[in-house]
Image 1 (spheres, one colour):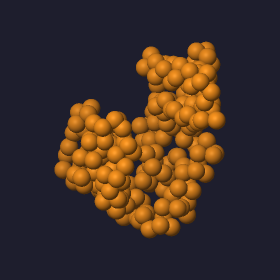
Image 2 (cartoon, one colour; image 1 turned 30 degrees about the vertical axis):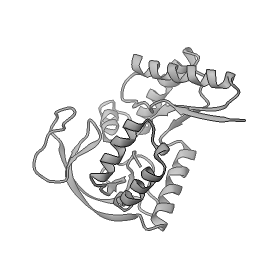
Image 3 (cartoon, one colour; image 1 turned 60 degrees about the vertical axis):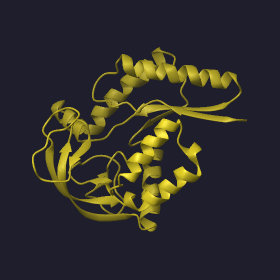
Image 4 (cartoon, one colour; image 1 turned 135 degrees about the horizontal axis):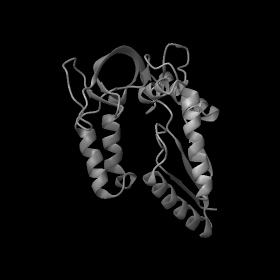
Length: 224
């Protein structure tokens, strides 16, 4: 049997679901139903992205622990998808036990292959948009939301993304079908050619999330 996989965005549960959440989920549901009718074995995933300093602060404002806060928001998504008769096969959330196991397994393999190291990170970070703004200490505003970026200085684990730059460019050249459509591949190639930087994949200042193996002071940064 042919297999087909699709996923909605993983929704950020800092507020109630809105029409955009419902729209994307119903579109995926329609595609999944069509593929099942065509005889495909369909894996249709949806879920919630339950991590980050923004959620930790929202939980504190609500006088709840982060796990309690996100669980209450997650329940709203469950009920809405049931009400809309969304026929998903998997609902993922950050600290679901099988997800925790998978993330830690990937980390251990990357570390064994020499692609993880610990070093000092210092730079400007936008809490609202969960993104790095600059690697310097000078004041800077987020180019998306316009808010002042906060100065972050801590020891983190880094993934050596820069080690894959030439390997990725070779892949795109030999297998252009790897990224489709063409204009998206061109964007990716241009981005990689501009230079890949190592990325911080852990946080010390956040006290909840998937625990880092062998280092209880760190949790995984959600994008890893």
